[in-house]
Image 1 (tube, helix red, strand yellow):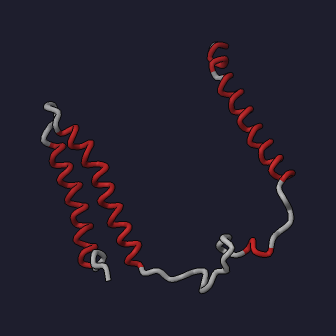
Image 2 (cartoon, rainbow, N blue to C red):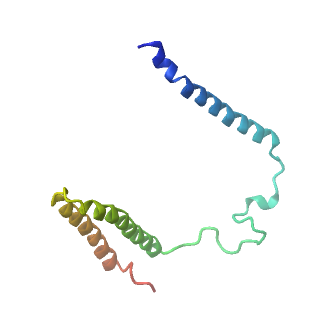
Image 3 (tube, rainbow, N blue to C red):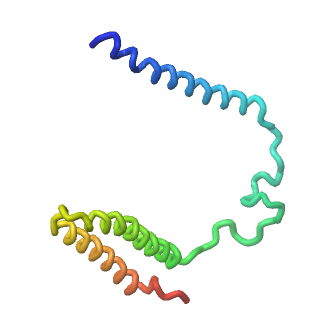
Length: 124
């Protein structure tokens, strides 16, 4: 290896050292300047000035999470569907691209059927 090879990475090494130094200096300054007194209301879950009522871990029905996952399924489908449509318009694309998207949509369709059978889509 030539000497110029290592000179090319000198800027990277200097930037890494300077960046690490700035991070360490920032932590040191924050440690020295930060207040040490602990307020009694600092331990409450919400620091908005209103005393919290009820348990701090409320139970939520699993339906909300499943509904969110169903939303993500269709968001992911939309993210992949638009670029696929642009590529599919190209005249050099084989018919395999069409069948790949049919398989992808089929898998998402079975996810929708599963959620429908579990009652995720019924909002009570």
